[in-house]
Amino acid sequence: MQIQIQKHELTREEEEEYQRELMLAEARIRRQIFESRSRRGFGEGMKFGITAAVIFVITFVGMNFGAYSKQANFWLANIRASEITKVEVNQPTAKPDKIEIKKTIPKIEKKNELPPLLAEISPPDNRLIIPRLKIHAPIRTAENANLNLASWDEIEEQVQDALRFGVVNFPGTAKPGERGNAFITGHSSYYPLLTGRYKDIFALLPQIEIGEEIEVWQDQRKFIYHVSEKYEVSPAETDVLNDSNDSRLTLMTCTPLGTAIKRLIVTAQLEESA
Image (cartoon, rainbow, N blue to C red; front, side, top):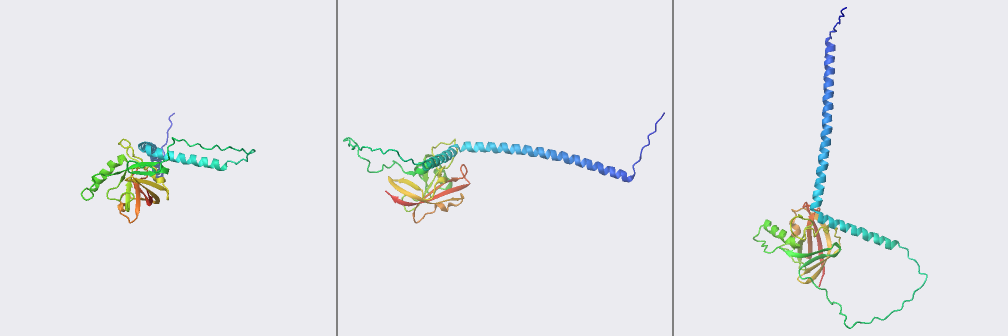
């Protein structure tokens, strides 16, 4: 027995509806494939970005490890000091049950005892000292810097060379103790592979406080300054080097730590000299 299958011929409207459904189905498939690729690409991009950021942070901290370790130690020391202060303040004062009477024994002077020093011994070279921040550095000068003949690049090269041995009294500015602007610059952080013991001498300079004491030894004389201002400028703002009518000390270093985006400026006024 032969079965005959009758084919249903589509009408024009049915054919058009079929084509529309087919196109919509193809569009949905293409959109799903595109979204899947986009999600996969975004995920890969996020992984790459996070990996690159981690590598950058590790490299950046490693290159500036000395400066960051100074800041960390300073921060931890402040926390310990505050905790000790809290313990001492909160400790109850107990009343003694018994009153002990101590006998005072007269002090016998030794004939061979040396007399106390009458004066403070000055360092053999010029020095900048900020006691609270534990900054203790020789003050150097850019030797043979002729401001009239040398170009700015040559002067900068000489200053960078002198910074390997301490902080630098910038050429053309006053000396500490003199009337005018004694401008001193130092590194907050520098390339770790380059030589020099003072690559992060000013790492803690951002922690300095208004009114803080700065001690400067210049030509065997001691000068005491007190901080009056602290602010940031762009590298192009060179007016911080300008002379002044007072006896001023200006300290400068790069900020934020490990970058040269801005310059931290600390100004201090001369209070006394000895």
